[in-house]
Image 1: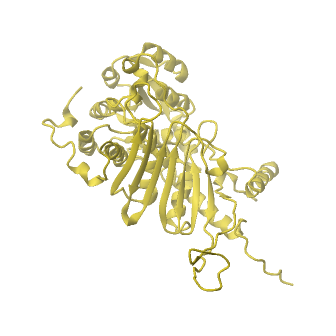
Image 2: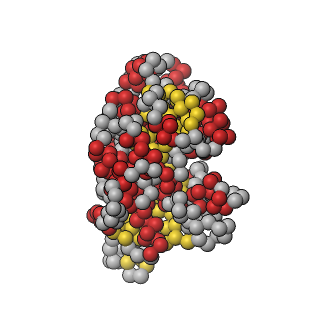
Image 3: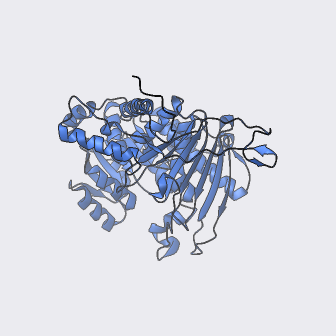
Amino acid sequence: MPEPEREKDDSQLSRRDVVKLGALTGAAAAVVNGGEMAAAPGILKARAATDPVKYGLIGTGSRGTYLLAHLTGIDEGHCVALCDLNQEALDHAATVIKTNPKKYKDYRELLSDKEVDAVLIAVPLYLHFPITRDTLLAGKQTFCEKSLVFKPEEVHALRALAAEHPKQTLQVGLQRRYSVYFQSVKNMIDTGVLGDVTHIQAQWHRNPGWTMKNGGKDNPRNWRLFREYSGGLTAELASHHIDVSDWFFGSHPEFVVGVGGLDTWKDGREVYDNIQLIFSYPKGRKLMYSAITTNQHLSILGSTRPEFGLTVMGTAGAVEITLGSDNQLPTALWYREPAPTTVSTGTQATETKAGATFALAGPQRGIPIITPGTEVDWKNDPFLARESKLAKRWLYSKGLMTPEEERNPVDTQLESFFRDARRGARPKADVEVGLADSTAVMLSNLAMDEARRVYFSEMDQMGTDTTEPMSRQIV
């Protein structure tokens, strides 16, 4: 006798949903490493063990040392040189990477080192362009942390220079493009699972965030707090979420408006300590962004994570997602939009307010987006491995446990850089991605400073009056 038909429960994950999500995350895993399937990295690793890309790192401060800590687990690259003005930081970085690298004080000496095939740049923002330019001119494969450039004239100069060096890899450190979870959400958008995606809401809230060290502007560790060197919260934090929005919407903003304030930290800093931005994209789509330094609460993902994350909202559903950190890896939850209700002003209304009928959907639990690593292989998985995966899936379905990405996207992006550098491939976070992101940073700060709507087309004329091509100026 056939089983009686059950009423649909929007709070539960259906078999169709599981199949759909499995296909989406599987597709994401296939493209996250340049289109190679899961078996391919084994081949590349075997080659990397005997033929790693020899690289040097310029800038051994907090970010540079952070990258080196991740690079210790990546076979595709081998560190042969480090550069920093600070001898103490330089010596410490050498102990982190443990490859007995050569040490330089002048980055141009590192660029002259013929053993160095690739260069990673992790210096303060105002130095990104001159060092990236000189690295390309020296014929090296190049990875530069975000934001890629600092000034409008640098946008035009680096675009021209990169076009003159098409065989050299130039990658920017926007690691969300290398996350399986973010790839999965992009696939959900592209395949219509979320309907028409109209809004993205993002934040990076800290408490307190950057603090002023002794010495003020004379202390190099305070560079992020001064406009001469830094793009502030927009460059250091918002840039990541702006890039994700460009990627998810498949376009760049048309204009930006915003409000910035220096309201809490009266310590001599020049950059805003809180910013609120709205980016308008084609077809009326919007990114709403917030960064503050007085509270780190994150209201999405059940408030289980602090500081940063975003919500992607479409007519058929929404996704809450965060990249995570070294201790907490990326995760995401999918919420299906309730079935549309008919709005009426007739006498059938169960609740009326101001002459109009409205209905609220019942509460629902987010559906975990499950990565391929948690899928059950009934044929090849050993018994214990299979049972472990099934137990995890049960915990996910009950909301007692949230799945996380198996690798930190920082590792994935660095590994991908070496692979792309070896074969001359164009990275996912390429020069145009980096320049678009940097443009958004500059124009956002301008919108807040001048309290006006700033159009992205304005960049076409900004910074074009330099008398000497910046792509040829040597520092």
